[in-house]
Structure formats: structure tokens, C-alpha cells
Length: 481
Image (tube, rainbow, N blue to C red; front, top):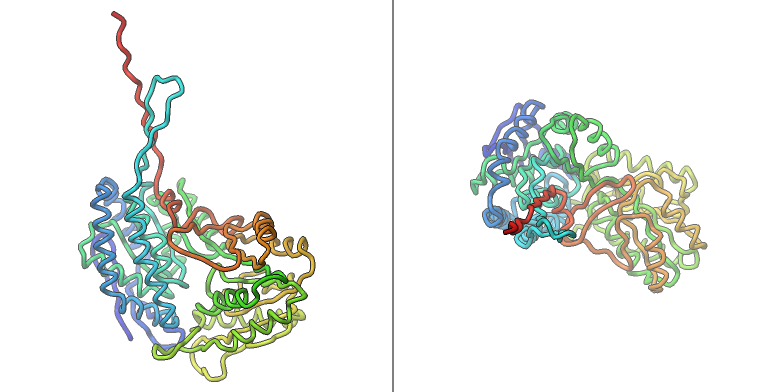
């Protein structure tokens, strides 16, 4: 596969100012060539969105829903090429591309339904002298910066609620994985979406991101990325008062107690760590296991890790693809080496799979005896490495779990429901998963502390794209005769 993709803004396809080669990290080969923007074109895309604001924001809900459904049908009709783009730009296992793609389909359907049910509401006047109506209005132009790890899922989280709310949106996918998002731009052009309602551009990430952040046009900047990127965007965006909705880095703890279903716990940990090569913000980063069952849990994790098939072949049951590039490979490997030097034991992996001589493949890796002060426990790995720490004291392990600036996801495994609820109440994370894991478009995805502000998914996310207007009217009283 070697496709050529233009950008899409102002209702037109654009060849940009230059071209960029997208590299498949599984093969090192060119997966596609994309048009890229410079800072001037990025601002122009925002201007096109601004021009569309008056008309797009005042379209009826019925009309916007019709456009969302039309785009959704076009996406369904192009499932295979969209998934192929993900497969090639990430090297992602073919089976895993389905969930990435499906989230975009589901998100458009969910927010089309959600906006159809929204209504203004009234507030009672205490004195009875006025009527008060609360109206939700589109916040304005939205700038959306996407991470590379789930190209269409990340797009789904931003595109659908913006369209539903009537906010023109300018989307900047990562330059590492722009192919699938740009194909969605082509589909927007194909269905004749009103000009400026949706705009998809790409280019050097910081150059384009800074130009968009510094502009006074965006009313809302929404981001999926690292905490450091989030702080940088807010600094650059201080040219005007803006809203921010950001899903940032994680450092998820897993607490496995002695009475847990160990096979279930090992399956969830390995599933999240290896399906996308560990490149998931909610993936377990620190696995705390009660000492009395540590050996049994480790045996299950090693068994499941051994069964993971690594590679890049549509015709095989591949469980894990490569990490995104050689830079990521080297960073992950250095973290593993540092942990071992700090006393951790390398149980499995820790290098390139012997049978894969090309691409950015890193073996599924398991470490034990990891120190909580090690870099691999302090920083987000974002790779296929399971770090196991043992514990004997509940209060101590809870303190260690909370000892991080991140606050995205966390996991508890115990069959004692009272204990699970007590621990959940004390964990300082936006999400707590007990005896399993569940994500869906109708469930809020959110972090606390340095893991972000705002919400993705669910009806709560739609609120990010609205402002509240109060319309108060004095009630006419009968004149005295």
C-alpha cells in the first residue's frame, strides 16, 4: 500500500505546501504520502471554520443529524480502506483495526441520538416575576489535536460531538498516523458536507499545533496527548481566553488482592498491555500483587505473554504489532534496562523478537521485583512492558498506587466487594475498573490531576462543546384599573 492523501478544509481538498512520507513501523516502508500544511495554511483552515460558524451553528438539529448519518454511511461503505490505512500507518494487528474503526461509526450514531434528545430547560423564579430559559449554544470553532495511537478512535471522540453541537472543527491528526483521518476528509468532500464544518489538516506537529493554539479563533482546544504537550498547548494558547478539554498521560495502577480471580486479572493486564503494543493511555503501568499469590499470578502472566503472536500479517492471528517507531523502541528498551539495573528481574522479553529482523517490534516483556521509585514506575511506559510489584499491606499499596501525578485509569481485582468499593473510593483516578475493564462511547472517559481536564465520550462530553445562555423575561402584570 502506498496511497496519496490530500488535506480537506473549507469544503475543498488541498495539496498543501509539501508532501510527507508516512512510514509503516512494521516494515520500514512508505505506507502513504500526505499533503502537509505550514503555519499560514493552518491559520487559513481556522479562518475557513470561522466563516462557517454563523451558518453551521444555526443549522437545525435535524439537518446536522442528517449530515452525521450521511458521513456515517460513507464511513461504513469504506470500512476496509479505512482499516487498511490504520493497519499500514501503525502496523497495528488487523483484528485490532476493527475496534478503532468501529468507534468512529458508533460515535457518530451516539451523538446524533444524543443531540436529538437535548432540549432547553427552564428555571423557576423564586419571586414569580420572571421566566428563565437555559439555552445551550455552540461554543464556537474547535481545534482538535489527535494522538497517533488510535487514529480513528481519537478522531471519533472529537469529530462527532463537535458536529452534533454545531461547532466547526479543525482536526490535526498526528503526522505519524494521518492516513485514516485524511481519508475521512475525502469522504466529507465526497458527500458535500457544508464548507468549513469539518476541516482536517496535518503537518509538522509542533509547528501546526502552535499556529492553531496561538490563534484567537478557537473557542475550544481539545487534545489527546501527553501531559507535557497539554501544558505546552495551554501556554501557547494564552493569546485569548479559551476552553480546554484534554485527555493526557496516564500511570495506571492495578491492585491484585489474594482473593482475586487471578486468571481474569492476568487476562485483563496482558490484554491491555499487548493488544496495541501497550500504546494505550489507560494500560496498566504498575501491577501491584499481594505477596501470597505473586508466584501464581506471575505464572499466569508468563503463560499469556508467551501466547502473544507478534508480527504484521493479515492472514495470521497476530496479537501485537510494532511500537510506533525506532525512537519509541529505544525509549522503551532504555526504561527496561534501567529497571533491571535498579534491581528488577527480567522474566520475559526485553528485546526484539528473534524472528522479526525488520520494523519496530518489541517483545512482550515482563519484569518483577520492580522498585516503585524506578523510572519505569514513575513515567508512562507506553509500550508492551508489564511491571510487577508485590505488597503485603493494603494501606501501603494504596499510597503507592496514588503516588503519581497522573490520574487517568486504575484497576482493582478482589472478590470482596466491600473492599473493592473502599479502595475505589480512595484511589485518586478518573476511572476505577473493578474485576474487569469496560470502555464504550456512552461511558465518560476522564482523568484527574495531571491527566487532563474535561471528558471524552458519553453525554458529558457533549457539554464541552456548548456554552450556556440564560434568557430571562419579565412577566407582564395586569395594570391596575
